[in-house]
Length: 162
Image (tube, rainbow, N blue to C red):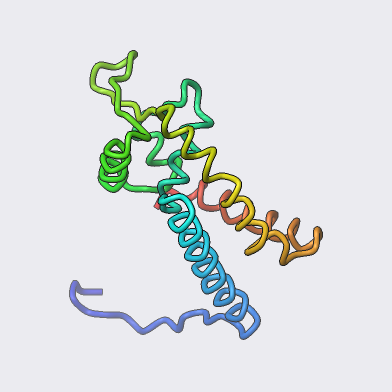
């Protein structure tokens, strides 16, 4: 085939009505859930959902600190977006950036005592919202099925290189 010419159009493999129903319900439900959780955190704790995830990741890390690149990967953020968020959180005194001891060029994000205090204050309301908006909607069997399904999605995503 010559450059610039197109071959025959390949008909996409369209979703069945059942597949489309599942996909759209997932998309709409997950977006609404994240929006509801974000609103609750902002209203009750002056933290965004993205801020909360960063604080949780740092609270669970040894020394309450992570290399910036590892933190970005852990919260599925670009390096530049994370840098902006960390700068904003530094202004609130909930995180600080420190040099990595093992690498003069590396930078760690570290949760401060104030950050830990804010996280502990936010957690009960957030957990209550997760229960109300998600967990309590399902039977134990349905919740196990959701967990299994999303674990498959995560595993497949981890295995992709594109």
